[in-house]
Image 1: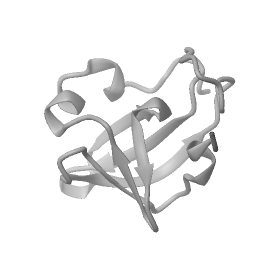
Image 2 (image 1 turned 90 degrees about the horizontal axis):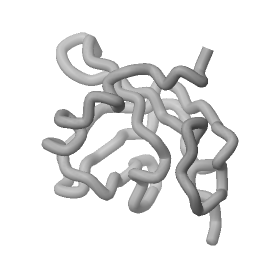
Image 3 (image 1 turned 180 degrees about the vertical axis):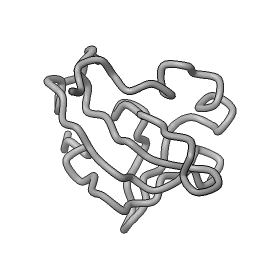
Image 4 (image 1 turned 180 degrees about the horizontal axis):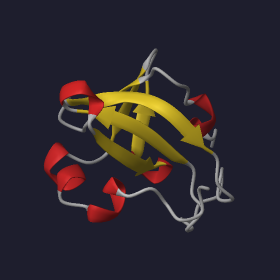
Amino acid sequence: MEDISRQLHEGMEVRTAEGSKLGKISQVWYGTSVGGPAQSEEETCMELHRGLLGRETLYLPSHLIKEIDENAVILSVDEQTVQETPSWHRKPTWIS
């Protein structure tokens, strides 16, 4: 299976499973679990900013990616799940 996280790039739109726009990728960090089936603490992560003037920052792990089309990342979770997962609102400790 192709590692879709390697297709990520700055400026791509990120949408939830139900199609809600979350924001655009501002940065991608490639962790040690790139291409591996298991999740790890150093999993590839995309940073995106959302809200008025991009004041909310999200750090979404690559295992949430359901698919990537031309310029959008579609997640496997809904917007409520994103909002209710505190760890996705903090920068991972392995990113310096």
